[in-house]
Image (cartoon, rainbow, N blue to C red; front, side, top):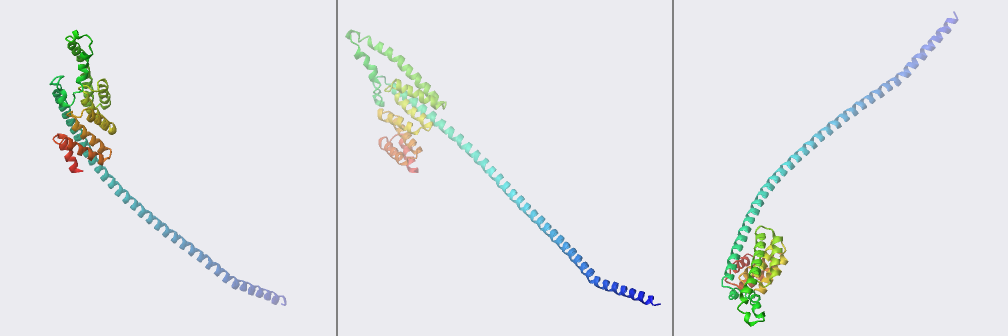
Length: 293
């Protein structure tokens, strides 16, 4: 019987120990449970934050894309408008260029017609009276051979010889001049410059020299060689001051000076033209230009 109380005591002691362990372990388990719940809630919160951030980023990306698309549309519209404006301007420029080309052609044809008429007037009186046009210098070379012929008895035979010698030279000069003028009409200005230079070099005081100087200057102007054009027209003015082409040569000089942005020199040349040749057509044009400037 004495052993039973000892066993019961041990059992009671073990039960109390187990109870104590249980009571001690309960707060620890509760604490563990609370920790897991907190972690779960934190994780859920992080997930929600992540989702919200993702939604915000998606919305921002959509807004940015929309803005970009709208900007592209605006740029595209502007580009199309600019293309339309450029097309209109291109058409207007083409029309203006065509009209300018036609005007230059008409002006060139008019000058060529006037040049032909003037040359007929200059050559009509004969070799003895071209001094009226300011080109008397060409007569001297023709009259020189009779004076140089030593035998007095051969004077009667000299004119035919002289005329026979002058005929081919004049014909050659005329052909060279006409060829250069044809180049100018065709717009082949380098060939025209070369041709007129050849005419002048062959006979610098010849009957066709003033016209050759004049058209040489025009060909140089067409090539934008304004300095060369001025120098050539000045030679015409100085060497043949009484030639009918001098007023137009002065007008061309003024135009070349204006193209070189030398407005003062251009004005002085126009005033010189009006002063020296007030009744010429070139003077009328000079007055119009001075009124505009």
